[in-house]
Every structure is written in structure tokens, then in C-alpha cells.
Length: 288
View 1 (cartoon, one colour):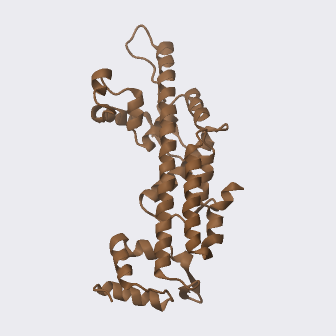
View 2 (cartoon, rainbow, N blue to C red; view 1 turned 90 degrees about the horizontal axis):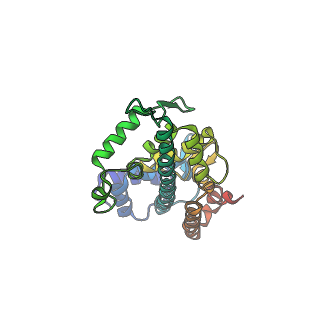
View 3 (cartoon, rainbow, N blue to C red; view 1 turned 180 degrees about the horizontal axis):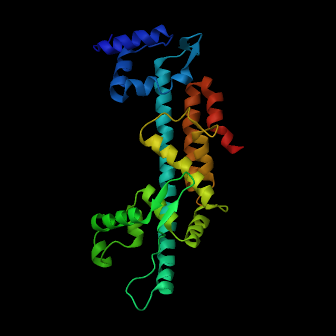
């Protein structure tokens, strides 16, 4: 028994639906630490079925199994987020180096000797396929903020460089601001970045779609939503992320995610072989 009356009511409720709860203290502890609804309701469709308006377990299921399924998702999210951080770093390097070179060319080509002003490197705005408009003023406001509040990448950086250069500015940008900066760049510069980042030719519209999947995953992962049973475009989200990483010129993020996710899944299937077919659909088909 637990000392929490809410847990006792919840335990009785799930037992009525057929769930086996061997350790009531574990149930109470997990619900307290990570949230009752987080554990029980995000994955309810995977473990329970609505049979003639009566919810029951699909098969003999313990609470420990549901909790392990939750933890499986946490481990997999962490692996994918590490690989996405590696991609982000590669993207920002390509972005910074391209901006440095192309902006320098832009300055030499477009400066007017009669004025101290030069033509803007970034376009005034860019409209995405989904209708959202990116404005230069918003991005430049973030750049000004970074210049005033950046963190030195190493001691003495400011003394040597006198302020934040484009590489540090882009490094300090959130991924969202960095991609907004990308879309505002001249078309030639954007093509150079995409050619560096991806193995095969990627158009701007294709990149928008590719980026949409990545952002959707990051947003859900950041807010700790369950992702194992989530589908997007009729495919499991984890599989989509792996396929997206596989398109990168830098294959380390993909190889790392594939290797680590395979190990995590295989360890889980060893304990719960009944989940093998489901997890094959989520992950293993990525190799086909």
C-alpha cells in the first residue's frame, strides 16, 4: 500500500482495466517523479484497446513494462537529440563560412564610393511554403543582442578579436534563428550551404520540408512528449529522423544514431520480445 490516497485510487482504476501492478510503491514513486499522466496516458494506445466501449489491456501487461517503455523512449530521444546537435554544428559551420566569404564579395561588389552604406547582404524577407514570413529586422535584432551579450568561446577572445565575428554570432544563435538567417541569405549563398550540408542536391523547398520534420521532432522531444508511437506522413517519427540524418554529407550523426538506437532497442527486445515486431516497424525498416 502507498501513503498517497490518489495513488490508491489510480492503482485500483488500472487494475480494473487488467493492468498488473506488482509494486505499488514503484507506481507511486514514478507518478510523483515523472508525472502520472506522462507515464500512463501518453502510451495508452500502445498497451490498451477499446473493446465494445470498455478499455482493457491488449495482452497481459505490467506497470513495470509501461514504465520501461517510457524509459526506452527517453533513451532514444537522447540519442537522436545528440545526433541533431552534431548536425546543427555542421550546419552552423557551413552557414558561417559561406556568410563570411559571400558577404565579403557582396561588400566589394556593391559598395558605393559616394556613401558609407553598402547593399544589405540579407534579403528583406523570405516567405516559407507554409506561409510564415521571415523578416530581416527580426534576425538583425537577434544579432545585435548577441553582439552585446555573447559568451567568449575561450579566454581572451574579445581582446584578440575586438568583438563577436560572424562565426561566433552564428554559433550563439538558436537553431531557429540560424535557419532564419539562412533563408534570408542570397540564393547563391543558400545553394552553397545546402551543397555542403547534404550528400545530394537539395532544393530550398525540399530543405523546408526536411527541416519541418527535424523541428517537429525537436519540439516534441524538448517538451518530453512520447515519440515511439508518433507517426508523421504515415511513417514513424524515429524512422523519419534517421532517414533525414542519412541524407547529410557528414554521416557521423546518422551512424551514431543508428548504432546507439539499435543497441538500445535490442537490449529492450531481449527483455520484452513481444515488442520486437512493433520496434522493427519503428526502426529496422530504415535499412530497406
